[in-house]
Length: 530
Ligand code: G4P
Image (cartoon, rainbow, N blue to C red; front, side):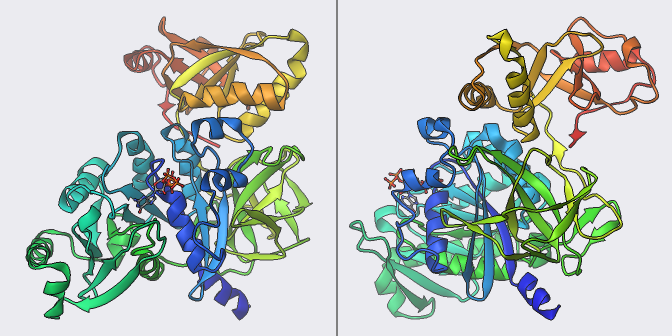
């Protein structure tokens, strides 16, 4: 048992979030390099190909150069066992990101120093702030011209609503990038780059009190640094680990992933500041990660990762105990015992069969179509469920019609499976025999993904007609009222989800209030649970 405790204690499970091109892939590569998981920086590269080697299953990703799917990487460094959860860097997939964050204990937010918080990423990053997990900020590409660091911090605070505390501070940027000052060690880590394509730069630690520093970085940079530090000491938030762990304060680091500058110090500080696997809430109270019983929940389902095998993988976060291959587990929502076949983990871009795994780890298991997002897996005999993962309210709706009416069965199978993965939500007319399918998505790109996947994976051509609805409400007290008698507005439609739950969709937000006025006692909510 004490072995289990030691294994769990050394786990660090986090997600990296970033705007596309801010440097997430490069940063991940450098982490792997330190972990010895890859031999050379750049070997996860031909990045464009490798990024997709992990999730080389959807052409749209390649066409658009965006990462739609997530993967998990595990490696060891400095006595820690690190699990990195990759997240899609596109706002239309913020729901996916949110779910992935449910499986993480902290997040690293990568920001391009010349771009700051980018418009398209605001929604994505806010999702993290909402989740109240510790967020660490890495401001990347300091080897290029960068925005003023004070402005960058101000932007993070005002736009994302999280306070910041710089752990290190940049001296210059671009051609004039001199390095960073470590506010803990009171030392300058200098960037002595011979940048010509070199992937790793030499670094040197010099104390701020060392007279030589002035000559090294130049008098004017030295003066500016002194000035900045005074300002920082006076104005910025003090480092407080409790505030960091409560997700209210983000430690900020500056560096350059490409030149491998500031990565190792970031990793070291970060690993110390984050915690080992956190406990999780469930219907039987808090589940302690160190408890002996194996428990896990499904946070992601990914289909057809390998086209050759047409497989579907359910990704689970282990919340407590130890998993051993061949172990019999109980799937609470399915109400039955099962053996998790071929559990897998990702190691760089390869998949491995896992023999054992511990709380904090992510395993992917073959899913014959039985799992749904949020499902609980355990070994204990007292059945319980982990708190559900909230579903985002879809903001775009479309009617889906299959073009070849003979393919109804395939169409229903495809669309239901894709919905089970959580990328889309599907609805039907309430109380009519009509077979019309309405699909709701958080981001419009998902319409394209749906169409593409139905055509390519299920061989079903469909037409999507967008509908004017933008707002959805779940009926909280559906047992107490007669849904068919709800008096609506002209822009409202009654629908039901796959489980038969009634919902209302509206074109105008003010109609929600009108419907509440017209139907006393009706309770509506903006969120549903998986
Ligand atoms: P992403 O996963 O967040 O989408 O970003 P990625 O790491 O793919 O990086 C996007 C581009 O930015 C890449 O250039 C990468 O080399 C570059 N980059 C990443 N970190 C730094 C940095 O610290 N400094 C500088 N100057 N550039 C950085 P690319 O030209 O799109 O790709 P490649 O041809 O270099 O592979």
